Image 1 (cartoon, one colour):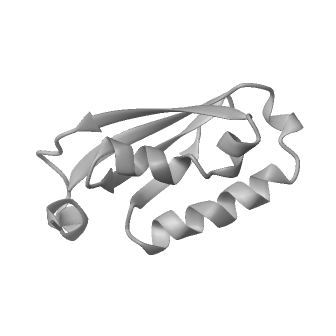
Image 2 (cartoon, rainbow, N blue to C red):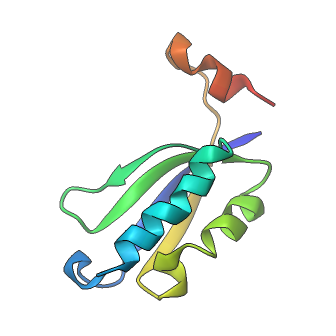
Length: 99
């Protein structure tokens, strides 16, 4: 499994996102349920958001986020940065060591 930071870059002010926010959060539930997303949250100031995620490849992750309402509505761009986790707290061992 490969590990990634996903940077979501908003293309317009967050105040304009309307009902896309609830749809985006519901879509992310799929990523959490399958173990793809470990955590996520908005940037401060709210110009985007960050995820820590894992997938077999960057393409698999990109394919997942291609269907995110923020992407399909043209509200945000996504950037995927792969990293190799070498240190983490013991409570996260299962998530990072699972193959």
